[in-house]
Image: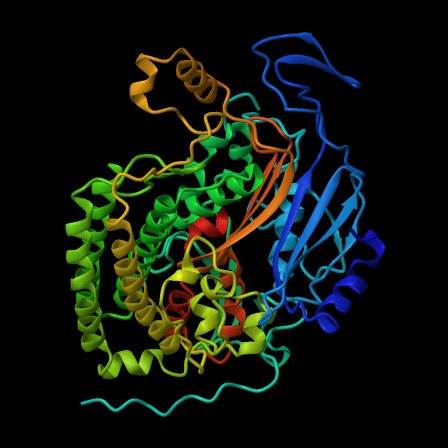
Length: 159
Length: 423
C-alpha cells in the first residue's frame, strides 16, 4: 500500500532498483457499499449474528472495512526473474493520482480505461480521454452507484 | 524460387512515440503539407479483426500519423459479472475472447479456486491443460487463416479452417458445444470425459504436425509473403517490455518469456515442450512463433492424452458439496444432496473474502484476472488484463516508417481480438 502522492516515486524505485520492468495491469475497484449486504441466513449486526432470517442472501461474515472508497492495484512483474508484486493506492472520490505513463508507457490505455469506467483522474497523463465509451458519455459505469439498465434511449420522442 | 531477404536489424534506442506512447503524431515539418491525407481505417473494415478504427495520416503512401480508436465492441462484461453469482459468471469470460475461450474460462475458474482454496483432482487438471492447448491451436489457426487472407493468401484460410473444424468437433464431443463450452467448473470439470474423445483426439494429434508443415510449405517460400512480412512492424525487446507486450508478440521480439514455463500453473511443469523465441521482432517472426507454438501445443496435447487415458474412472471434480453440484443420481435418493443442489443453483456458493490476481498464458499472451470478493455469492469486482488490449498499444510503435499497405499486415500480426480489447 502506497501513499497516492508518492506512487510515481515508488514505481520508479520498483522498476529501477527492484527490477519490476513489466506493468501487467492497472486494476481499479470501487468499495462503495462494501459489506452492506450483511450476513447471510441471519441478520448480521456489528457484534455478530443475531436473528435467524433464513433465505436472505448475503455474506459469510462482515468483511474487513476498506480505508478509502477506491483502490488502484498496479500488478507488476519482473522479467526474467518472474517475481510479482501488487502496489495498491487508496483514493477518495474525486481525488486525483499521479500518472505512471512516464514510468511504463503501457499504462497509457490502462489509465484511460480507469478514468473512463471508474472516474479516477490521473494527473500528468498525456491524453486522458474516454477510451471504451463515447466521448460524451455521462458517468462512469463501473462505479457501484451507477444505475444498471438506466441507459437513456436516444430519439425516443421525449425530447 | 524466392530467396528470403536478409535478416532485418532491430533498431537501437527506443521507438515509442512521445508524449503519448500510443499515438503517432504527424511530424511538425509535414503538418502544413498539402499532401497530407487523413483516412479512417475501419471501424467496419474486413481486416480489422473486429471493429477497430485507426485514424491514419498519410503522406503519399507513407503512414506519418496514427491513432487507434477502440470501444466499438464494449459490452460491459465486467459490470455484468458483478451482478451474477460466481458460477453463472463463468459463462462471461469465454465471450470476452471468443477465439481463446477456454483459456479465459480457465483463468476465472482458477481465480475462484484460489480464493476458495479448493483442491482440483488430477484428471481435471490434465483435461483442462489438454483443452487449453487445443484451444490455443484453434486460436492460432483462426489468426493464421485470417492474417494470411488479408495479405492475399486465400487458400491458407480454407486449410486453417479445415483443421479448426476438427478441433471444434473435439470440443463438441466433450462438452456438447462447439464454442463457449463452459466446461470448466470451480473444482474441476462439468462432466466426465466421454470415452470416444481419446481415439478422435489421437487422430488429430497425428494429423496436426503434417498440417503445420503444409501451411509452411504454402507460404514460407512465397515471394509475396516474404516481402510483406520480413522486416516490417519492428518492435525491439526493450520497447516490447515497456509497452507491456506478452505472448507471441513478446516472443517474436526475442524475449524468452512464457507463463507456462515461468510460473507453471495446471501441470505445465510435468510436460515437455519448448518455447519458441525469434529475435527480429517483425511480422515474420511473430508468424513463426505462432507456427512453432502450434507444433508444441500438439505435443502437449499428446502428452495430456497419455496421462488421461490411465485415469479412467477417477473423479473429475472436487468433492466439496458446498461448491460443487452433487451427482445427478443422488438427487433422487438424498435429501441433503437436493438441498445442496437447490442452494447452489438459486443462491450460488459464497467465496471467501479476498482479492487475487491470477495470470495464464492465453493464445494472445498474459491473460490476467483480478478478482475481489466480499464473501458473498457474487463477485465484487472482476477485471481482466486483456492481452489484445495491450497489444494494440504497440501499433503506433510498430507502424513507424511503414507504408499504408503494411498497416494491415502489422495490425494483423499483433493478433488482437476486438472482443477482448473492448470487453
